[in-house]
Image (cartoon, rainbow, N blue to C red; front, side, top):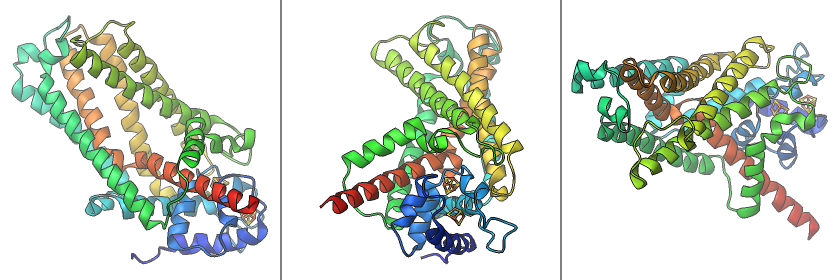
Amino acid sequence: MPTESDATQEARRYLEVCNACRYCEGYCAVFPAMTLRREFSTGDMQHLANLCHGCKGCYHSCQYAPPHAFGINLPSSFATIRNESYEQYAWPPALGNVFKRNGTVVSLVAALGIALALILTAVIQDPGVLYGAHAGPGAFYQVIPWWLMVVLAGGSLGFSVLALTVGAVRYWRGTGSKPGPVIAPAADATVDILTLRNLGGGGHGCNDTDEGFATHRRWSHQALMYGFLLCFASTSVATVYDHWLALEAPYAFLSLPVQLGTWGGALMLLGVIGLTWVKIVTDPVPVAKHLAGGEFALLALLFLVAATGLLLLGIRHTGAMGVLLAIHLGLVLSLFVTLPYSKMVHGLYRGLALYRSAQEKRTMKASSSD
Ligand code: SF4
Ligand code: SF4
């Protein structure tokens, strides 16, 4: 068992005050989950930290926030504990260290991904093919062979899915989560995730930048999440077209894969721009500033993936397609590889925390109605 961190001890002290105060009870899922406990184990602290979505509502409304002597600042401490939980439960365990310098690691992986894709393409491809214009079915595979795309994309995504699955099991066990009802809590958590209900702050929004309420962060996050899912759907539909319908890319602009990818890419760009703006202008006190590098690096990577995908659509019939295709593929591979080792992993742990919270609420409700 690792030694408990300063952030965990600090947040536990805050929660002991919060459990007596309870002013923020209706703000988010954290406070109802807190009231179910009298004591907070390390696993409980990690669970509550992953349940927190960093709206800062409890900071801006707290009479004990800095400069008060209690110095209660839950959003900042919870952000640090979340990052520590990503590090602790990462698989393979040695790779958990990448969360210590996440901005540097994500930037390096992105640069290496681009370099690797460009070098591989240049090595295996004749310059006349790489810099030539290609059109018609199979044009992309004339530049980067189908087998190479499958090996690189399938290998990196397959490894990340394995790492995320093992990480999820390690997190679930490590935070002391117990078996319980499955279907109804899973449905509750799915609705919470798809609507990002907790980022709505009960309707008026969150304290995105200061003590005023706004919904910029919620809508930007929605745009990014749904944009990412649309792009994933685009790739999945294209795979079905290619392997089961024998229709090779590139596809017409109005085809399903291109439409899904275009709308998905545009939403991702909007989401990244919105989230970056909120991060730049927000009040820095209730924020864990040491984590900003990793967050900005991931936003930059997501921006580049979406931007190069859209640009590829615009210039796919020109001689620039080959190099841009290699750059886009390198960026996508970097994103796949960093899924378990960047802020992207928060979606998994937040989902598990919402599921556990829904389980606890339903178990409580059932036992009080008995
Ligand atoms: S954050 Fe402050 S106001 Fe909110 S419950 Fe805790 S002590 Fe009370
Ligand atoms: S920052 Fe928002 S989500 Fe996190 S504990 Fe405070 S009120 Fe809840």
